[in-house]
Amino acid sequence: MSAAAPVGSPTLLRYLLRLGDLSLVLGQRLGEWVGHAPAIEEDLGLANIALDMIGQARLLLAYAGEVEGGGRGEDEIALLREHGDYLNPVLAEQPNGDFGQTIVRQVLIDAFQLELYERLASSADARLAAIAAKSVKETRYHMRYSGGWLVRLGDGTAESHARAQSALDRLWPYTVELFAEDEVDRAMADDGIAPPLAAVEAGWSARIGELLGEATLERPRDRPYTWFGKRGEHSEHLGYLLAEMQYLQRAYPGVQW
Amino acid sequence: MQNNRDWPLYEIFVRARGGLDHKHVGSLHAADAAMALEHARDLYTRREEGVSLWVVRSSDITASDPADAESLFEPARDKIYRHPTFYDIPDEVKTL
Image 1 (tube, rainbow over the protein chains, first blue to last red):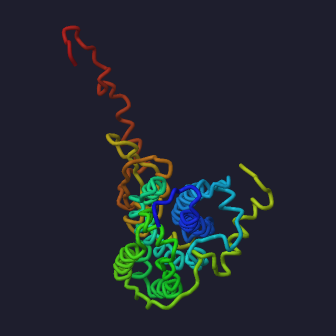
Image 2: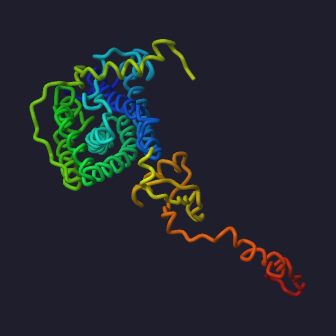
Image 3: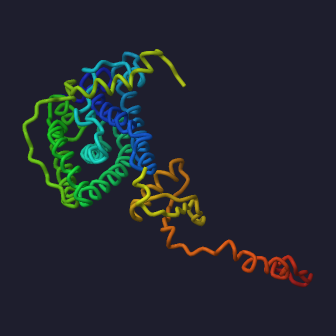
């Protein structure tokens, strides 16, 4: 694929929706902890990360709206699409579960975003590079927070270790999707807009391996997986999440505060 | 919230800008100093309040007893000669 003009490129649009929806859906999930975290300090910590995620989603989805060129703004894209139009990986929409499951999900995604944003910061697409350069600073802190907690839980009590390991075993299969390259990923890599996913995977795998070692957790075996949120095929959980997230905008169209 | 009871209390100090002192801003619970730093970042620097953080275990602070205030601090009240403004500066002194 030759260097495509950003505006009107359906491939770039899909790529931006994948990134934006990952942050959007994970931010919504983290927001569910507000008022329910194990300590008020963690309540604030998780809410801060949630807000960072929503901020990233705004930048990415607003850009997606411009690339689409149909006049849709960030709110319309974020809040008024249908289930199958969301392109986040299925991992992001998995329920919070206990605190350990939330932390494991966060670690797996933080490491992915960190390895991705670090490389996207030198993207051939200047707008995307700027968004990544801003987001990578936030993501380094997210990684520090979630990674720190993973080590505390994994290398903590017998119960916290067992819960962290069980969450890891449950969520691990969904990570296959993060690195399953398709025609969108290839086109973005060919254009120098996105890094090759294999490079992201290598960085992710090393980072996660080191963390799991420190956390005394066992790395689950990779298993075949064929469920792709990045192609609009989601788990049942996304529908409930969207129902809550979209309720206000659908009940009161165009409402602002 | 009951887990909070197991976590010790930390006092948090924030330096607003380079060159300024760290100022006490409040306290929070954390399992250890590393976690206290992260909590402090999340609780006390959300609106760009600082460029540096100190955390100190509250139990490591030795404080004066409020009941001793009379004997500790009141005797200084009538020692007005300890303030530089007590002294008249002779006209001959140019730089002081």
